[in-house]
Length: 181
Length: 413
Image (cartoon, rainbow over all chains, first blue to last red; front, side, top):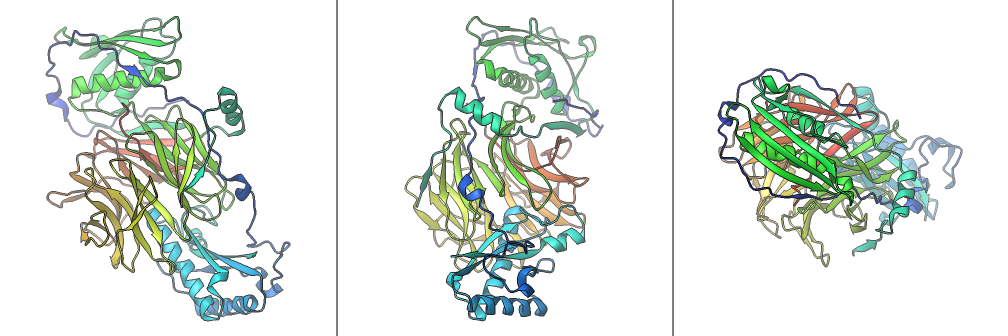
């Protein structure tokens, strides 16, 4: 690894008081540095990690039999710092609720996301609020709570990289991920 | 409720080597000093005799990187470091070094440092710590480690690594790798374990992992949010954030031995990002119960009242306490964006230390003199440090991908 140094910028003289040396320590102490070089690496639960549960934007695989008009309409977007669902999206959620209510054995995961602004752990809370707002909207349409699960990724899994309002708007979302029970 | 997941244990070198081969190398960090003091102390660090590894270079780089020293020729320096680095017949590294005040001719330090073959770099950092303390009169944290998250690849297909490295970014190794997010690494007080959040099962769970053996244990995998672990000073408990069935986040305390769970906050707002006071008697946390997020203080027991701590501005979140307990660092939103601020807990005065637009995750070095945080620079996630007085700042950039979510480990014994 190469280290590149930029010369320190001049700011303030602080250190006038640091050259008052005490008597030399003649004793030869022998501290022993501890090895920190063990190289074991843990692995996440790969069996689960490998499962691809995502159906977003993947019209070719549609194992739950979503009607065509819903296949590519699996994301709800939100304004900045808000969990308010637009009336158009409430209509969309009604269609998803009708599908769920007419189809046994299908469950739905609601994955809440935020844009990258603000602190990571607090954003987990904001993403959860969005997922819960969608869950409530579906429950009000009669979808059984037991068929709905929420997970908040906060800002950890953006749909789109980069900064700026375009990316931020694409990232403030709840993804609807269908699965079979 | 505690699931014991056995990770890759101490099964000998072959196991470790195979795993290393199948795990991609961590991104390398490179340090830039972006500002320092005006009058760094000139010090000459001569190449150590017989140096089989560049240990004198490591010492010089540590001292320079602190911003308090400039390394140069002996005839223009106030202090001189000389030494001899030998490998003993049993393979150990033995460094004899001396620190001399060139103005008085006094020998200030004369010591021998002994290290196992893998630990020569740690020995050099310890020498730099000794020299720094002898001259400056305060501790430094060169021989400590940092943990952070590295993210590679374009969204939405990203790869996440939890990495532990020396405080200078060297010696980095991958602790855990996943296609799902990893976040919020937190050190145990003894530096032996990391707690972190992993979404590897496509839901959130908190794990603790022993660094030496990679043994890992899922300590919280309840439905909903499992987030923001923070180790108690005695190492026996974790403060953490869980959600109720309606998605409300509250702060809890989990006994690591036995799994007893205590709900600390009970409020229909987001309560999260807990951190312990150094004596374990208080928790500081973020809550938006007043509208926007602010830092509050409470006690780690059920039914305790919470007192608001931050008042400057409408967004103050993710607190961390200084090692002496006198200052609180957190993220504040001002006109320019999200920045690192510190507040004096005695008189309440607050100052903003960083200049980025998207700064995150501040934390103190164990000596308390420096804060590390995550920043964005031209679209890339980098780590940055700033001295607690705001004068000295540095960047640690990865050679690829984003790095973020830093946590500075404790002093090692």
